[in-house]
Image 1 (tube, one colour):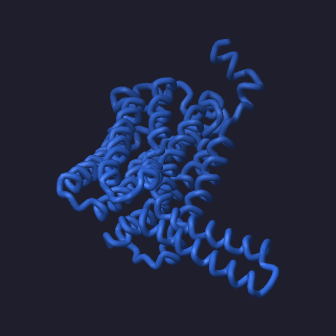
Image 2: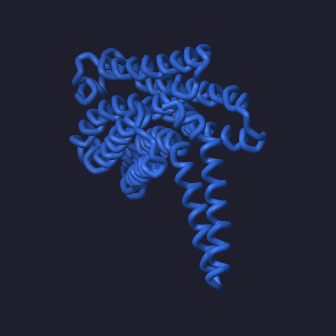
Image 3: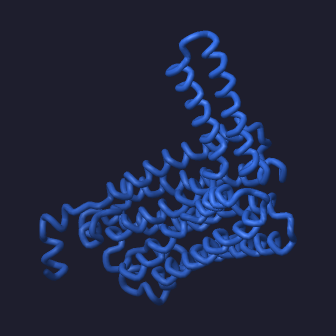
Length: 335
């Protein structure tokens, strides 16, 4: 089926995958707020002072919410999710809005993927006392900041004049002479994120395995740190996606899927950055629930209840000591 036939097809004209991006934006907005809230509840319960990584997470949350808002706006007023030839005929103004919103998404994305990882790196800088590891962490931070800065500058300077991106006459009749290759921009601005993910994955492991802990505790703590780099999966998927799409041919349609991964990647980074901080709250909650359940199930007489209270208290102290050994020993003492 050729393009003209597709445009005339009712099925083609009605096709809309915009709700996919809309739903992802709302879902991750809720998840991001939840994880950051749990992070600060955990800090309060653990009686830990706020540090640089906590403030970076708040900034990351604001930017991620802005990114989700942009995705919703693009679906509502920019025709995202519908085929470009259809939008050009039915709502040309939406195509202009799509091009304008792309600028905002690019700026927000560059910052959104960097702030959560900078938060993770800030945690490392408190933990690492040996200079080689601190220097390596600072170098990774430098790469992330440089990549975000380069992405913002390249985005703002990619079209001359600036309005060429949403000027339909220029954009449709002579795009290559006034704008850089947008696909290449999106591909290679994403690649350094994968590299820094790998670095953040590797950096803490030598430090953890030199701690005076049991092997099981080292494995558990290593897994906590590894969660900080799970965003690499979303980064790889998003990077590979740019090799299978053509934005200029059907931009408003493919942008819906692109927005999904543009939201997922920094969202996963943010949640992963919160997981180590939430872990003490999780363990304390499980311990408390076990204590309450034990008392309700087996507390028959006063003397039995008292004995069981003492046993539960000992278990609670054991869990608290485990938390202190595995996380607070590293986190709280470095504050």
